[in-house]
Length: 507
Ligand code: UN1
Image 1 (cartoon, rainbow, N blue to C red):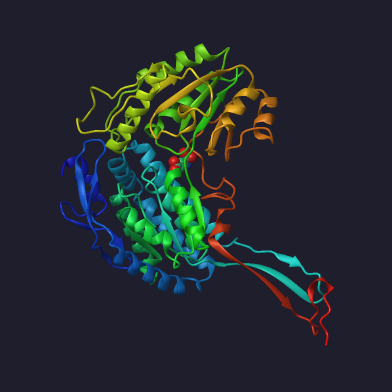
Image 2: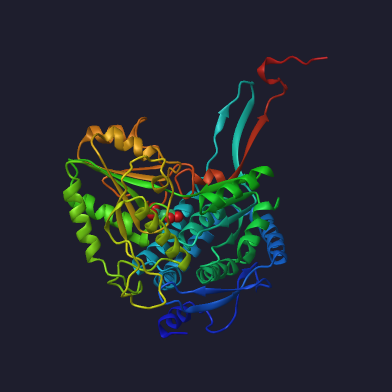
């Protein structure tokens, strides 16, 4: 193993040159196939991991259920205290874990550390939440009756997470799920097993210190067969899946067919709209980070750019200048802003999309190739690309599909209404951003006829959302309500037993 990698693994007590167990249910084990963790920057094999066999998954599920049955009676503020301790342990390893994310996933170091910070932030949030998961008392129509809405723990939550945020996505789910009194079983992306092992070890230490079963935060690494067992199991009350639309559709249908609950965080096809009155000194770098940050591998990355005709030439000139100043480099190096794509498959996807852009005669203003000079030959480096397709039909494939790579497609508009129509004309609806100084545009954009995405930003890019602020889904303000089983309890304190709606059933 290179010294570049060994220092990072050692700092997290990950044994070098030894097959690792990729299953944790209180014990480390694994009897499935062996997978390799490959560094996207160098192509070096970082470790070999023994994944979960279907039998391992069943066993872990059994342990997870036992852990849940114990944990559900722990008072919520006490659960919050456990989360506080997990938070402290993560914070102590913030830099080391961030470096591991960079090593294994390929994003630059400040972003690797940034997503560990997101896990810390959601723990803080969940600690507070553990004293605020309140139900309501509903006014009953019957005298001497009370109706309580009680948030009870739900059961076992399976978290199926994606490669691009190998720490944060799990963190959002784990923190809310634990605060709610559930046990969690995690299937990380098969290409980031090391990160999941390191995170699970840190949480396991905190659980063990509190005499709680390790299976409260279980781990099953592996591919599709592992996911299929979790998704199909009646022992899993909630499946939280983050990944592609294609797999999300399969997961959602499988879970609903057994009347389970699911949370699906799928693709984005996010647009930035720049109005003629926008402050370009904010908008140009904002779009640049949105499109090129994380090498275009966030679900919130900017994929479509709509420029008002009057400012389009200047905007594109300034944007291309920033693109030209980007140098691909080792994402562990603090000066690097552009790391590799995560896998060679992602490079193929990038290449075939660029080829398609050429076939439809799009103007390629920048990029369109792999890098000839990269820091390491084995790395998955590509050149961020800006293209102007001839057609602005948003139903065309180039506009309507999400390519998980740094390709930014540009269209020119005249009126804001047209740009909003384009923004809303794709099947995905995750994030969107408008750059303007005119309040009237802001009103239109954030109102009923505005953006139909879940994230509707103004003078802020499409990516980089903070925790605590998306309604209903993962990590948002009300997200915890999905991790509990709501009980509606009608309690009669009176000496009569009247029926609701005035129904008379007296003999
Ligand atoms: C993702 O890419 O799966 O808003 C999530 C952001 C990050 C989360 C991205 N906080 O860009």
